Image (tube, rainbow, N blue to C red; front, side, top):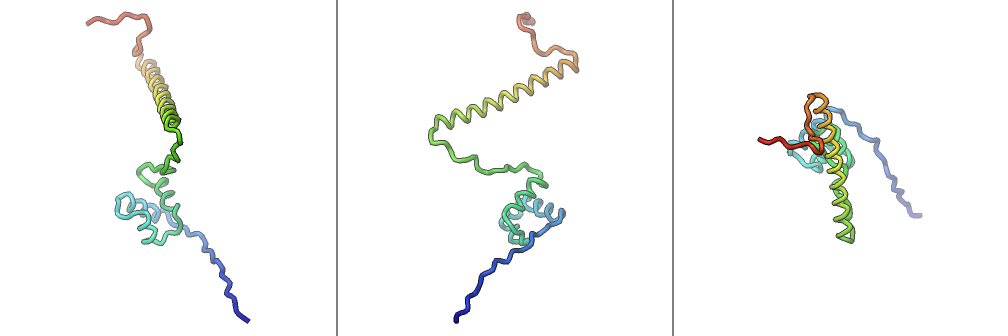
Length: 124
């Protein structure tokens, strides 16, 4: 009779880290002392998502949610159209912000910034 070994996966309880520890890891990463992989090995941090989450929460810099934009479209014209539409939407939002800023400045400062159409230009 042969004995078979049963392989059991032993799952560890999730580790909890203190706020001070998390901030220290983020500080070391942002000072470029260590990479994420080096910090995981050095402090025995389980999982690949801990440090990126801490960076978003405690970091001084802004970190993207996703590092890749996605797979490019097969048709370069379609890709270019999408990029231009995104740029246009962003510029339209900026224009709205500037118009609101001018509106508030005119109201608060009681100064006419935008010339009315049909008004004559002043001569110097």
